[in-house]
Image (tube, rainbow, N blue to C red):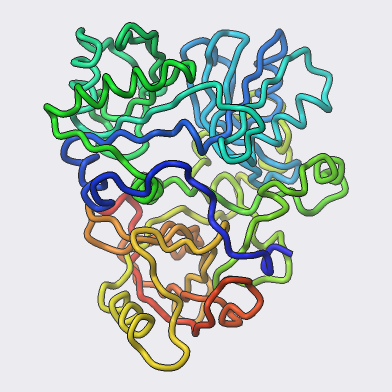
Length: 433
């Protein structure tokens, strides 16, 4: 079903570019870039006496010290220990949390809150394109080395000291603003380089206008959707994997609860990795680089399975830097060649569906899957993120990415027929400069 779904992309309801996507990419390294996240992310707000218990029961993370003005990357797994979804969990108060991100974790938590015996109230705020009403919160992301200076000017006072993944408060244009210190792209480890601002939707235009005015002095750029999607590749976050929900009788009630028109029922699964077993696409937290945040200090869904998997071999998340000559060969043959040509490499993002997984080969051996391919002006290279076998995850090792559908796109509506292409790539264990 997923392999034959139409190859469609998620609608981003804001401009693709303000200056140009490569200029906007460079801005989060040299000055700062401002992204509007008010429209495309789901927001699930939960409050009540059992709020912490709900997220503790569902997350691999420890919730022992979580509460007001804290945040974390929340990870949810299936009973079998396979990844379902993630998101940023905000502690708005000790018993009031907000889970923000894609729909996979959003739906899982909403279902468990409804099906379980939890004393909580849940408010769903879907993305604008799927929202029957209007969004309730604005979200702006300011990334780059001048972010702290820009916000200091916008509020007319020095920035407060906010710890990493902690929240603080600002006043901008007379509006109360909550801010999270984290890094989506830019310069990790430097103070105030990644800041997410949020507040009531009606305050959004006023706050935005003040930040844009303050940013002029520092050369701040507005960021469009084309550059926004490349931040994940630079930071190393794999945005979408196949959620481990399609198999198992224990998950049948959840499958029946889900909206058939949602992402889980309409995602297009593409790429050269093609298996008849959907479980071959499932991932563990270790595969995605989340092994270091698993904590067995509490009971949660998937704990027993993860304890059994802990000492077994895992795949490792890596960056793949694609060989420029091979990339140029695909560009030339796909754009100017005769006959059936390779699948086009779009710029700056080459995702042509929802879930893209290409084979990563070491010689003739399959060693992993590549995803989220595209170009970044900061590294001046075509790159992708990948999950590869631990014994193959050697910094500098050369592997091959097999680009394109096994059947040349015949089974997927809207895909132009093409042939597969082999592209060499070099493994990097840290973000390439």
